Length: 178
Image (cartoon, rainbow, N blue to C red; front, side, top):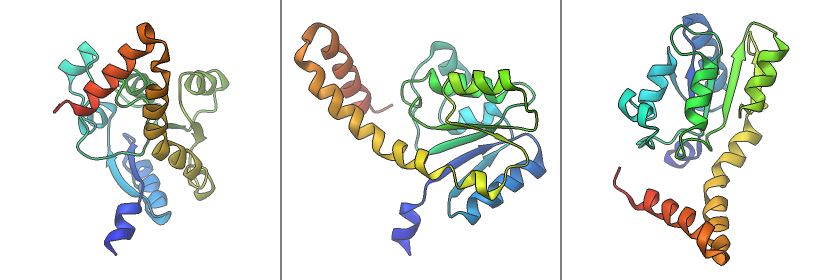
């Protein structure tokens, strides 16, 4: 039983509306995902280890809990789902986490902007089980991505002036206590 729990993907669900948050949480749990649900982009960033001071300096997050995907509502007070997407993609330690945006508004320019800026998917609400079934390929890619990137960075040392700096920074991040 412990092995099955370790193999579960952890999804951070972000929605300011209780009913929508409960729906996405139920759908994800039905599909055997571990779910953490929060009601704002700010709380999502706090959960991921980014507080306001760190966000302002674009410092890297220190994530104690592994999050494999973030699914967020677009329209939320304070920080929108798009703002959350930009914060995550702007943080070097979080940028590889797939982000999915949900909205009840079918606005093509909004959908395109989110996808162009790094969202993996854009779901129209109400989210359905068929939508949730589209998540697994993104989760599988994200689980293998860090190892691929580290190996690729190690292979790129051939050009010492440009790539060594990136590789050294990657090594510092992985060995730093923060």
